Length: 250
Image (cartoon, rainbow, N blue to C red):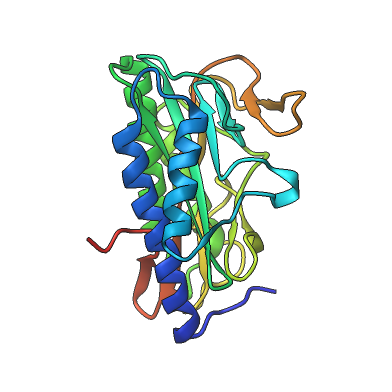
């Protein structure tokens, strides 16, 4: 069942999303060669807690970090550690915040120092595909029209959409119905209604679409070792379109 949120619930989710967005701003400023992913995790946790929220991911199914920090060929669920970032790396940071029982969820992929032209194009296309999907988010539209728009944007540029991981509903649970693939046929799936809150999150590989999970049972990497990127916003369907909840108010 897809849960539509009330006006009061949406206001709490705006605050959760604001905390997530401002955490991203802090981390983007901190990302540089030689910083460790654990240090980024500590910055994030300290800020989230300072805002009266808790990190959504910490302890989730046993996950040890407050953020997911995935570097280069790591797609999602990278565990923060003593790994130092290097010039030319890219890092996907996924952040969740639980504010008064409601979650915000957003991921972004950042370059570290001077990155390759391939990496620049990957980040540009993946971000563009997110907004291509969001452009289809409106009342009475069918959910998989969003999925199709993301897929077309990515594949038109010669990149691959990961199929094993999908977007999702968000609310009092971090993952709610519906599941939202980043591929599919348009004009299919449930109709969108005002009050639905969705995490739209394209995950894109430079090479083939296949991924695998490492022995830590968390970190997902590309099978062929190529670069990958992950961009995500939490949105609410409004009477005339959508609102991005995971945005800064400053």
